Length: 417
Image (cartoon, rainbow, N blue to C red; front, side, top):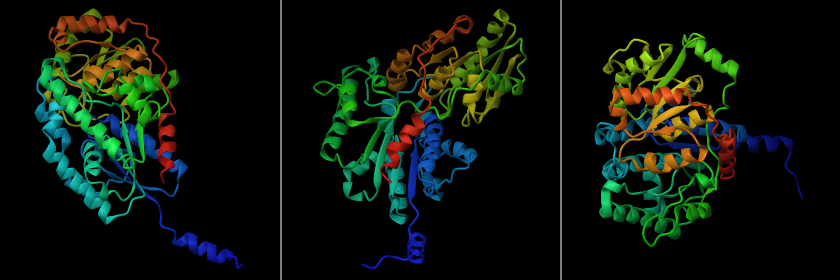
């Protein structure tokens, strides 16, 4: 039998098509972008020839630009989900489930953009980090799948808020039942389902009356990557360097205040600004760094002595790791970054946001991390200041957060290429 010459093998390798992946990262909070970039970097280590394109919208594109990641030109055609979420929120209240129900037009538009992209260019792998529209409409139109598809999420199951009563309980159960039916009918559609966390991070609740338990079903249908921070906790020397860069003197204390990247936390920022003078009266050495994120204008906040206001802060996790205490919204990424850094913090979930009030709170409780306060409690500046000072004095010892989640997720994804 004739064998291929070395020159022929070189020609075949030269003609081999480079492998490509399309990454979709949810714009509802910047945490998806940070963990997805970490996973993409690990994936390139496993497959150096892999080209990754990003189909994303603001504010994710801001994070991608800082990281030097290539954003697909069709991203400009996506309807903005963050703007819709901001329109649905008011005074630290976001009914997340109902907001998702009212964004069908946005989801249809964005799926059509996605479908045009994958029709124009062949991708070996599509990774959807809570890309709800792609997952839903592919299940409804399975003939459109022409690539390996991986789904990632950090929570499973729509849950009703108590204020919604029986009607909302029935609606969330109906949404969950539809998802379960889709997954049962088209098991081949997702080539991999990855949960960003561990089995015990899944809430022990039911999908609804007559439906299975969420934790039991998730354990049977997902692979678990462990939590993805995308960084190793900074050393004491690194923390000291960050504090020095921020201008924090050795005899000063630093409180970082941040509400994520979706732009719905402005009301909480104003309440914290009202509490700053009272907190500094109790601890004059306390300084504040207030981070508004890319969708809230820093100029919209009042000025306070001892407080610095900034917009978007790259590598915010380093600043959080360098703080003495923090006040944050109830988003998973920021609270888990503080957990990984063993920092004391207050977190104020958005009212009627089922994920922050149930899924995130369950996970933080498992880690023994943070102190949850209701937004109503934060309405009294004196009470908020007292809670902040009390938390500042709290010696914390949380459950450790793994640092290899991104690498574990990359291995699971790399098997599909």
